[in-house]
Length: 295
Image (tube, one colour):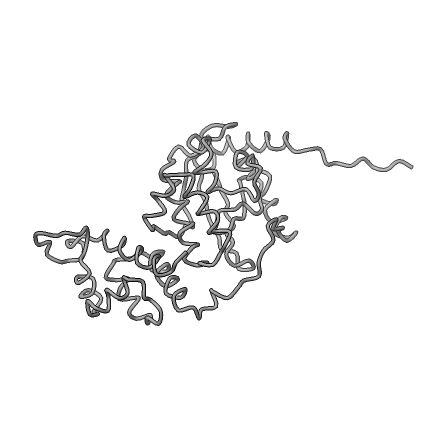
């Protein structure tokens, strides 16, 4: 992904979202661009129009944190957008530790035994580990049952983004499919800012862009987000409708990975549905018990 292009398209898209009224400026007449003009952003950020135009052409290398903060304030960026801008600046600078080659994980990443024990200890809700590409890397039994249709794809690792945009079952699984698709692409965009040299991510984005117009449209919007906590609606093909809260925790021992746990409100129909799903999951697991040796 070309950094200058990423910077230019991101800044232009953010500028287009802010109206003069939102920025405390007079709207005026004969406005030929959506949102703010470059000159207005420059004035709000306290830099010259020439300098801001240079930034918007993608030249972020060497830009100070103070200027980036000023631009973020002028464009009213949220926390995720501000972090993304700083990630793009670090990528442009080329000196950040974020750009040093990281120890490459094997295609079939295997969790530490203690991590799998931790996931398996969560019995009331789906618990899983994913990376920024939305690969499912480890899961408890309930998560494997919950995402059974994702795991049905023979391609490994199982990938939530590929399921969302390329599998027709996703529109049933996510009753709010548009929202789920928006979140999915925003997570991938955020990861692209953090890991601009991730070849696997490039390949995934290329595949989804080629095969899904819905993905292409969302990818071009340059939206990013932090995905930490909230609630989602699902329709599981075995147990029906569920509304689940989720918590996403960044893993200190494995930078770039997120542990996510879903939970149902106590006493709710969704809690009953999870219990039913757990029973179904147990019935699907192969019998691994070994007979005691005879003397």
